[in-house]
Amino acid sequence: MLTPAEADLRIGQHLQCLPIESLPLAQAARAVLRENIYAERDQPPFDRVAMDGVALDSQTVSAGTRAFRVQATQAAGDPPLTLAGSEDCIEVMTGAVLPLGCNCVVPVEELELARGQASLAPGARAEPWQNVHRRGSDTRQGALLLSAGVRLRAPEVAIAASAGMARIRVSSQPMLAVISTGNELIEPGEPVLAHQVRRSNAYAIVSALREHGFDRVADDHIQDDRDELRERLRFHLETHDVLVLSGGVSMGRFDLVPAALEELGVHAIFHKVAQRPGKPLWFGVGPSGTAVFGLPGNPVSTLVCLTRYVLPSLNGSLGQQPLPPERVALGEAVTVNPPLTFFLPVRLEQDDWGRSWAMPAPTNGSGDFTALAGTAGFVELPPGPNTYPKGFVTRLYRWS
Image (cartoon, rainbow, N blue to C red; front, side, top):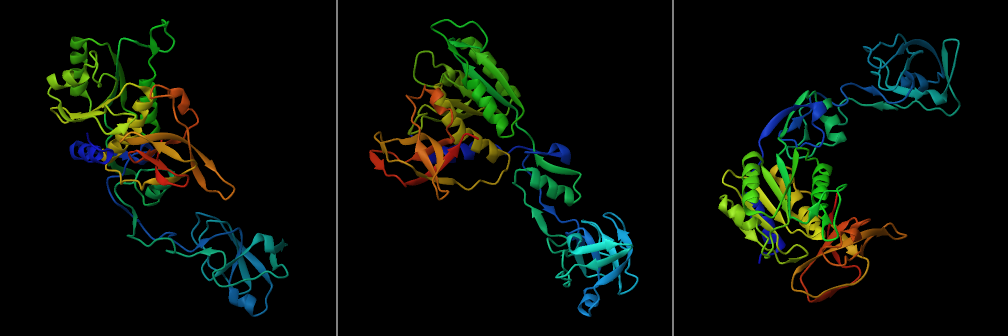
């Protein structure tokens, strides 16, 4: 069996990079940028007033003048005014261009304004470039602002807007199909018999995909019937970029998915990974390049494999820069007995010093999905037999 690291490598070698599309900036949230963005001009593009108050020449204050005639008002968005004389000042608003002839701003809290005159309060200072955001102090024209591969959150969208980008080139959203298999699965809200279970895995997968910015997600449920399975899978292979299946990939008589995929020309890259839970994980590639993830049907296994393999792989196919691993220390000692990589659900707790600890939240087997409520994700522990002490630092995978 492959190790998790080897499974990562195999998936990465066979997952196709998605094409590029141009989107209006207002529609680009959560997309992955596929071009570099450079500064359109200096930022700020002018000497910018940083506080409401009056703009004046600081040398006049140094010479002893403390009261000034208010010449005019400079509002944000207006062309710069010019100071008429050294004993004049101009009332300014935050964000306005600094008037010509001025080199400092005295905030309104340090002024007395009355009858067209501004007097500096006792102790008020007027230093050169005080309360002025100097032109180009953030970035210079032509500077690299955003590199291809970043996911566009609110700050990145604002940066792109500041660079004058009305449209930007991003990765196209993949067409995803989430497929659950099994005669025992009953939809929420439908009557359920004692020997049946609710169809929950598919809802968890779709939710996780959408939380991570994947919106083009179809959902299907296929019975344990060879002909139906083959025909439905044929349709999804022809119409989607990625299939995420839940169930039917183990070794039972009704685990029909691997054989059906093989009949449809899907090349199996690997089946089974040396891990717990999620050992029966299956991955293959269809004739037209469709990536197929076969996740084990037990709910904990499904969510662990989705988080550990599917979501990072999809982000990679978007061209997203790999995120640095998040590491956390165990809050209690953990014993791992089997010679398999062990994925342990955890809750995060902070101590009095603000340090985060991963507190084990073990499930009652891979079917006990209710135990995952309130957990942050899971940690990855090396194969056993071994006991990992409190303070052992390992990687954390968050559900979202």
